[in-house]
Length: 62
Image (cartoon, rainbow, N blue to C red; front, side, top):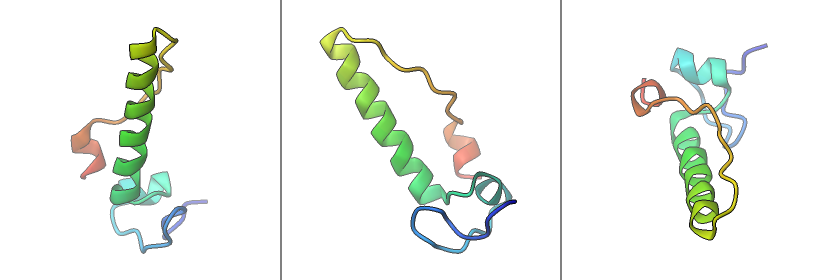
């Protein structure tokens, strides 16, 4: 079932993509930055870089 509020912050979701995802654009962008930062840190250390299918910025911002 699709949520009409963000599962992270509880804000009302109005964008259809955000409703489908269950996470609003602000929280989604923050999660993407955190994942990217973790991947970059691992790459600098020579560790394995986890691959995640992330949406493009255009898809995130609707």
